[in-house]
Image (cartoon, rainbow, N blue to C red; front, top):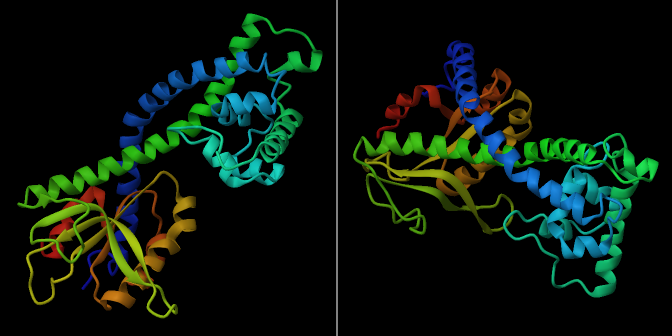
Length: 321
């Protein structure tokens, strides 16, 4: 007997409750995150515009000196360029762009020789210069210096574009913190203890749990080759004849229906690899919050994957905790 996968008569009500739960959290959290993100990015945008002489000098030399400007300059085009789109249009190395846009340490890759580096940066500058948004930066078209009001307005527009891309990862991180926190509180109330992530999955002691645990699993059709599958939570329950392997929980939180259906195969692939390694009864469940529709639920149910709703976390008790 399953927890939720075999109860389709509950799905519609649960979907509605899950969406309401997510939206209530989002409305209390996201505006604050957006404001904080915008404050951080506004000064960066103003500096980038100033350092490029009001976007007149978008050159390899500028990007070499200020690789952190690249993410800002992508937002100065019409339409704003996604990172992968810039890579595709310019034909530059993905690694170059990723390293330049590293959020903690934006830099130029050290392995590129001088001639190759200049050529790659020139390709990036060419695309950005050709696609610069002249409705926002109309002083470029008219070949004149902008007024202070024009500069402030343009900086505000780009900051708004950019902080959206910055706030999305922040929101995702907070979603994860919220879900892991909910599971942690639930387990600790039942006498469980959080243990070191480095402890092997097979070495976990009863009534312990761990976050972001690597679980070795065989790759189908590759002659015993193994990979590490990372699961969000591993829980070692009191051991019985059918409770010997840790319970594996995958946290999923989504703000729209579209993306979850694009990603639903990921969980199925993990499940297949885990079953191939640990048997058909490997305990693997999803912890869902937000926009997961009947199409998503039906797909996971057909793959034998069960789930717990965050708005009804008490269902975890059905897993012999």
